[in-house]
Length: 161
Ligand SMILES: Nc1c(C(=O)O)ncn1[C@@H]1O[C@H](COP(=O)(O)O)[C@@H](O)[C@H]1O
Image (cartoon, rainbow, N blue to C red; front, top):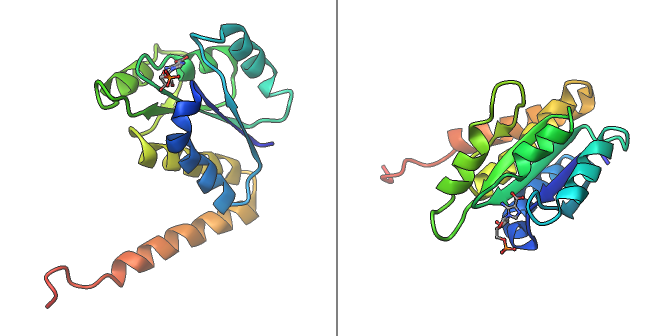
């Protein structure tokens, strides 16, 4: 497995599945696990402490509300950690975002957008990180981006003229 996708609760999966789909698109092997800084702190320490030795290259961590999971994951591993703020009901994910984004200098989390687009982009960014040492994967990413560009260029005039 190249990428570890962790999340604070199974309730985060509808969001985090978008990270998994993106990795599927590029044929990147990943594992998924529910692990929480709050509810399973020792499991988090074990998971992140052994991640590099197990061959993981990137960790994607999604959590909602008091979203301490990405920051604590980054505390336990020197692998790059991408944080996804899961949209919360009460505060629409602003709480998640602010809990993840303001890391202290010296311990980094790459914070993505709130919700599904952020999860998808976490998968994309993980692929881009892996592609820096994998030319074939970089080719697939170039192709993905070109298709996106072509779709926009071919889109009809919105007013129908
Ligand atoms: N933010 C965290 C952490 C953590 O940061 O360690 N562990 C669980 N949670 C979050 O609690 C929310 C509600 O969880 P439940 O649905 O299980 O009550 C989820 O979005 C989860 O990510």
